[in-house]
Length: 389
Image (tube, rainbow, N blue to C red; front, side):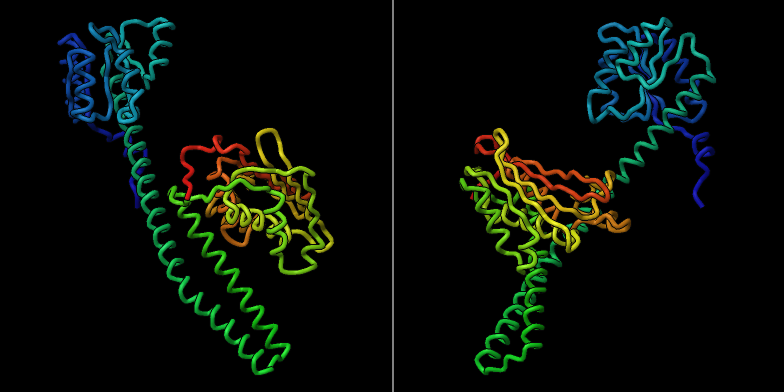
């Protein structure tokens, strides 16, 4: 069984730094705190206090406001302005009790206040609470770093497994193609067998595309994906993506509306074609047979825009951001909100952002969805993180 949080809080002791230019005040606080089991460090002015914080890494700082050289508010502000010390609670000690003085301390980032002359019980309670808060923060930070390590381990393991799947999958595809070729050469074209072989080959292509997406996502996240940027017309690449649709029925459900003028932008042709194919494929998957899918390609200011609209079930507002996350599909699928068979939308988001663009969804439950992305039309708009082949 875990310890009772209240009991744990009552028994908190820790490292306390006392910063005060008056020796009598320093000694009084030292005696009070050490009697309760705290380890106490002292500094005689603000500058020394900053140095001791770095050296001793206290759990809480008791900081006098009125000091020569550097006052307590300035010390507090500097501590809170540094990522290395911002989490350390600061308790300001002052004989000044006006509202303006309190506001200055709050503005500097103080966590709590003590008034002079200090009360022993007041000091011990506020120090105890501050140490408890610091320990909670430290535990949370440790859990966060551990979670990041586990996520990195998961991603590395996934990448390794998926990468190793490529070779056997390529062998399966080659064997299926060879079987198809031999059947045609031997005139053994049994319709059922041909249909089954075609289906098997189609499924292996789908699996290969999913593997490629996962590997590319890893590269995009690591900033290691090189883009083959070339000027092109988004109308053309959209038409090429539609030509890859596997059936006449799918073609008939898609309505393409494009600008009469070229919609030019610098982009990686293969990557953007995959983005459009993913968005259209998802629209087809989630739109009823009697529904329609609309695609618009146009220029919007200094941006080129592609939008894919469907008449599917729509997406609840709370899942409209999650569906673009790498593992957001898992949570969305549990409540019937998944919009992809895998990592397609994650790939779309990373691929578009790698071009310096953005992607979003507009949706209402029961009315359908519109996935829209923009690409900059000028090469110099692209961010410095874009790498070209």
